[in-house]
Image (cartoon, rainbow, N blue to C red; front, side, top):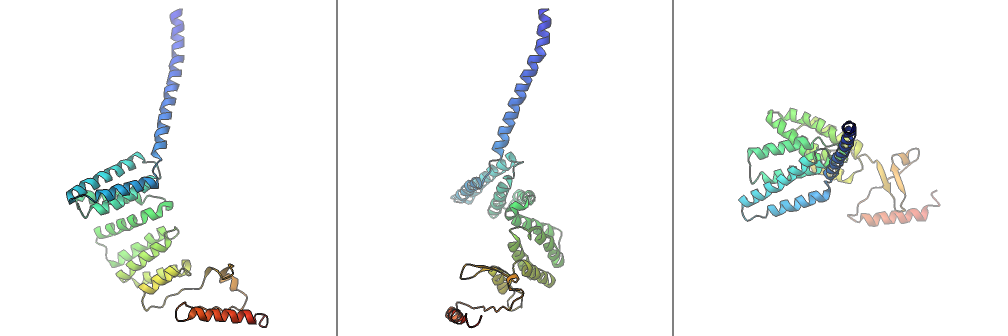
Length: 278
C-alpha cells in the first residue's frame, strides 16, 4: 500500500518539477531575448571606434586582420539579435565596414558578404530608411550591371527606387540622387518627372532650389512659392492659402547688392504710410 501511495504521488511531484523546469527555461529564454534586444547607437559607436583603430595598423596586412576581426564581432552581433530591429544598426555598420575593407582586400568572399549584407539591410522598415538607402542603391546597381542593363533600363529602375523612399524622411535625398543619375544617363523624361516631384514636394526648400540651379545649369525649372514662412513679427504665414481671395504683393530681395538696405527702406515707408493706405 505504501508503494502504491508512492506510485500515485510520484507523477504529481514529476509534474511540479517539470513545471518548475519549464518556468526556469522560459525565464532563461526571456533573459536571452532581453539581452538580444540591446543593440543601440552606442553599440555602433564602439564598433566604429574599433574599426578606426583597426585601420591604424602599421601595415596593410595588420589592418586587414584587425578589420576582419571587428567585422566578425559585428556579424556575431547580428546573428545573436536575429529577431531584434536593432540588428539593422549592426547591418549598416557591416555595410560600411566591408566597403572600407575591400580596397585593402578585394577578395570574392568579401564582395559576396557585402552584397549579402545589402540584401538583409534592405529588409529594414521605413523607420530605418536612412540606414538602408545606400545599400539599396548599391544592390540595385549591382543587379543591373550583372544583367548588362542599358541606359534606358537603368533609368526605369530608378523609378521604383525613388518610390520606395519618397514618403520617408529620405525623400529629398533620393530625389537628388536620382536626378544626378538621370542626368548622367541622359534620361530627359526622367529628369522632367523628377523636377515635377520636386515642385510638388519641395517647392520652398532652398537647398533643393540650389541643387537644381547647380545641376540643371541654364535650364528653367519651377520653384512654386508655397510653404510656411515666419515673418519679422514671428507670425507664421502659409502660402498660397493665406493669399487666396486678396490682392497680395510679394517682394523678393537679396542681402547682396544693397538689397537689405532697400528692404529696410521699403519697410519703414510702409509703416509710415500704413494708415493712409489702409
